[in-house]
Length: 243
Ligand code: RET
Image (cartoon, rainbow, N blue to C red; front, side, top):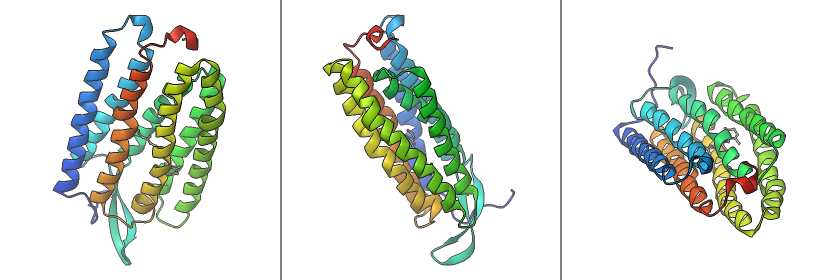
């Protein structure tokens, strides 16, 4: 698609994305440096968490460089015939990183691997629905959005009920780190479909505002979440979680 987007990030949006690039890159280095203070047998959550920010670093590098997007026909503030910059690279990031975030939580809770795989599959359905919905120009996009929200509700159920009970059975220290990181996740993940609804979905906000909205969510959902998770695991032997 050789057409350029009418609704695209300006220098301000690009600056936001470059800021996130450095936050994600710096977090990756810090998580990996911290892993060196632990024996190899105790690094699983460092590796998972550093992978998340490593992938995000490259996604943000792409968006800061105004790459990884395709122009999609939209109606913006009742003006038809406009093209919006849709960053598909965001969904490639989420396709890799949201399963890793779920692994951080579900491994902490000691959930069995068939359940973890199944929840990741449902998560993939959610992300792909968001991608396809963002690329569809008709109101059918809200059909994809609805399927994605159904997937999110199921994930919230597993995290909030089943995995929480499992974490509490492993001890009050495991229960505490799971509750902290799980609560942060539930709060943030519910805000993503809202951001999508006003950005890629409804075209209510400008791509610069989209940059700010998703960037705040991602900074909290990846580096801040990761720091809390690793801190919470400091006195927990992975062997207790079957790892
Ligand atoms: C979409 C649109 C379709 C409906 C739903 C969505 C949810 C997305 C979520 C994304 C989470 C991303 C994270 C990224 C990085 O840390 C795909 C926006 C429900 C929950 C946590």
